[in-house]
Image 1 (cartoon, rainbow, N blue to C red):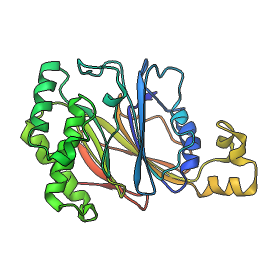
Image 2: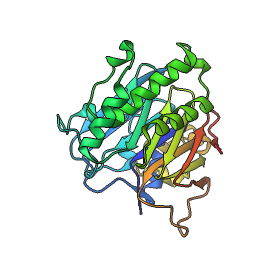
Image 3: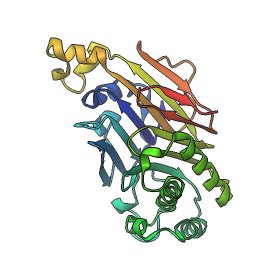
Image 4: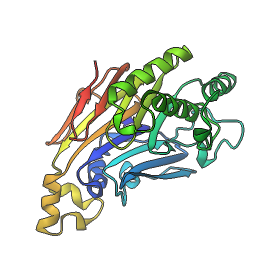
Length: 284
């Protein structure tokens, strides 16, 4: 079974994501002894953020999606081996995903030595515009990377984020990593409510596309998901693209997904876009 620490989801029916993740629980799990999770979802063009520090034991992937309302969502689980800041190491403000104005992102990896992480954090936050400084809530290098990325995006396109293209975001991430001379594995999933742009440097990733859910799968979370002809039709019409990031390893070749689900395996060094039409674009 594969352990996964980050999920990016685009769907036409957020209330059925719980069912979809229930189906995938046969193949996917969260890290053992995970001690916190966060969810950023877009509702009416606003980022709704929920971050819950504490023992995650006993929760399934489908539990994260209970009551989900937004068609675009980032979900992140904190593993026990992740580097923590010296100040308030278990605080919810140090959990991803991160939110700043209209942007949200999951940033995992980076320096795992405390001194290197602190030095990189200071470098990333140096010269950040004042209107963005107030959005820095935690003490992690990963949040500093996100804030710097937002600042670089504003520098490219000004205040009209509708002009920001996936290609510009990918180039900005690439340039930022080059400036840092970063040799560490990283996984970044970044969005402002249009597409989810991802960039992986040395971390295992994959995408699962879903066209319809089996009726029998609806009974696991709640029988109400299939208790009428309308509910059953919603399962048949369900569509989603799910980005899996910071996986514990590649997808096993002998593991076949149910009918209607397709796996897209990605290289450890890769980048791409989950598009609004629920398709995946592998960015070469």
